[in-house]
View 1 (cartoon, rainbow, N blue to C red):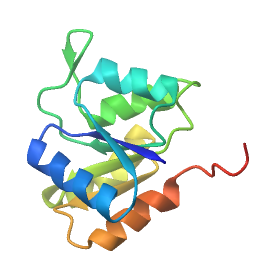
View 2 (view 1 turned 90 degrees about the vertical axis):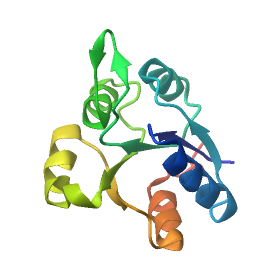
View 3 (view 1 turned 60 degrees about the vertical axis):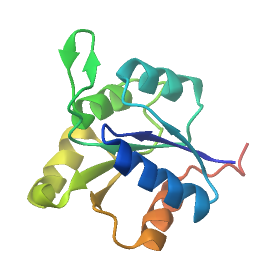
Length: 135
C-alpha cells in the first residue's frame, strides 16, 4: 500500500483529498500540518509522496512561520529526502505563480484546487509515485 502525506491546514480540503485518494486511488493517507512531523515522516520513508499545500497559515518550524514552498525547499535540499516526490497544491487564484512556485521550491508537480476531476487528481499522484518494483 502506497502512502500519500497530505500537508494541508484546511481540514475540509484534507478530508476531501483523503477520501478521493483512499476510495479512488486505493492509497493510504496521512495528514499533518506539523512541519517537524512532515520532516520525520519524509526521513523515515513512511510516505511515498507528499501533497503540499502552498499557503500553510499555521505551520511553524524552529520558531519561524513557513509555507509549503519553504518546507519543500527543506525536503529537496536534504539528500535523505530529496528524492521524495512533492506535489504543490495551489489555489486557482495563484495560477500565474505556479511556474515560480515549482522553480523556487524544487517540487515535482502541482495541482490546483478546488479539485474538479477526481480521476485526474489520482492519476497525477499515482504517476509520480516512485517505482516500487525495483527493490
